[in-house]
Image (cartoon, rainbow, N blue to C red):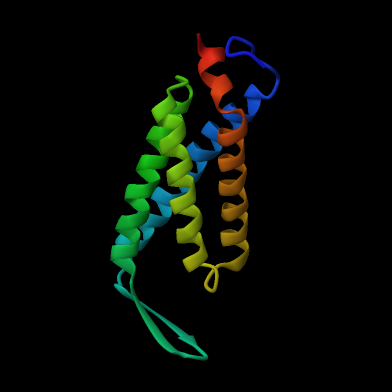
Length: 135
């Protein structure tokens, strides 16, 4: 494929942008819920011991990563190369952060992790076509 040819696979790039925006909105909503919760601690009792999490700190993390995902998702529609690289990095960070929530929300974490993997796939394999399709 030459640099001037666009195939039907460019839809994967659009898919990645839309999924990033949706994931960013959901992360931001979850983050704001955690920030404004009346209690600021969350306890997880496991076989190895007790884990204490600061819910507000985790909430701010999700607000920030959610806003970044939304902005980069929108920038993907311009076909910018920096947006593609940043989106891959943010999707990877979001996927790792979902692994931390796996014991608490296993199904939701697996769904979001799967979508992050699809976004990374779409942008690494077919992301270059976004720039060509935009011009």
